[in-house]
Image (cartoon, rainbow, N blue to C red; front, side, top):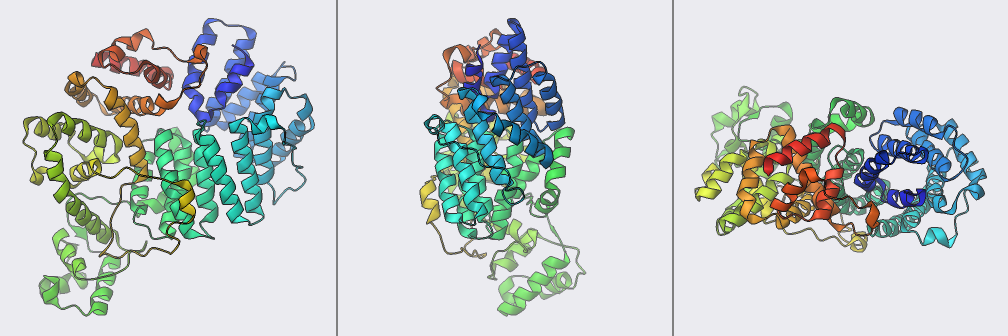
Length: 573
């Protein structure tokens, strides 16, 4: 194991985690002083990715002791620069920046690319407050030929253009960075480039900013597990941009943000609370619960209906509601309004959709949209063979956060017995069936600059709630696993899943997602590709899964969770 090999692996960014875990297992078996130093560096990377910045700094100080000023020393120093930036310690950032810049000629060539990325991004980030940070020279072909170095340098160039308020040029450079890093792939870079476009344009070109939330949501779901901190940063961007544009998808983004946040452990939740306090409070106002039930009679809902009814000059007869019932509600005497009653009222009005609308109105519009799609999709679903019904519904279930509301065991039994009927499908089940027939998302990055330049205004008459790209991406991942799964054991696999508790199900779902994520990784050196460990070999063989993604997905897990994965997959054998 050489430092050059390690540098090659970490060019995947956070996507390199399973390979680093595999390397650590190997290095521990052949322990040398150099291997221990490599392990310390890998620990720093993982602590940084988990936002444990103080621990990472301590590890750096330990790891750097006694090191000569060679490649590993400067890799530690580069990580220290990034972590100090995250901790907003500008004075210390400047000290490390100067040391790296002044010693750039002493840094080994194979390490320089990583250092250049960080120096350029730090310099442009602090452009307004500290112009004394001189720009590093980086026009060597060696960096241009390395796609990761090139991608991040392009993003630094983009930030420079943004600082100069040249937003069109900044967007073009971020698009180039996206394309370059997607070919690696480098997930954090891919998402960062798209996030930059949406966030920087939200106040100067709202519509183009909105267009780029589609690929941002897609690659966010495609590349990252729920507990990754990139998820929250990008979901925050998507939500804010969609809200600014009164886009109906903002309600689903709020739902996703809320569900992902609720799944975090206490330590990670505290970190997110600190960074996204305002967003957390805000998204709660937009989360829609589409279960059946009456709506509370709020002042906002009463005032809106009064205003719209008077504006439209609609008669009581047209509203399909008695005058007594309407008067009791509008005067605040009645504390609740039935779902059907509210829908009857808004069906006879016409109004624009905006972020200030009372949630009960959006809830009824979403339920109406679900019903309309379900009328057609239920019959399509019932025409499928039973095996296809099982695979499609199970896929849809694993992908969506609605699964927490769906009684999967009952639905599976109804499918297997051929007794599934429309009347027994609640709104969450209907939404999962509708999802099966959603058209795959087609994203042409270049066209997003020219598509829908005029601001789109939705009304209650033309609103439709499209599937969130976050789910579209995860559907692709799950389908890769299901496609490889031996269909002779499909029902058994689902039954074993049903018997697992909530924590075990979460681990299984992550294993399935990462199987799909790592299916496309091709360029890892043979000696660094994880092998299927003997503990899961029977599982992999029984279900005829591909060995490479099976092994890589296994090594995504660490410590106690990996032991739990062993035990869970044993139950599936």
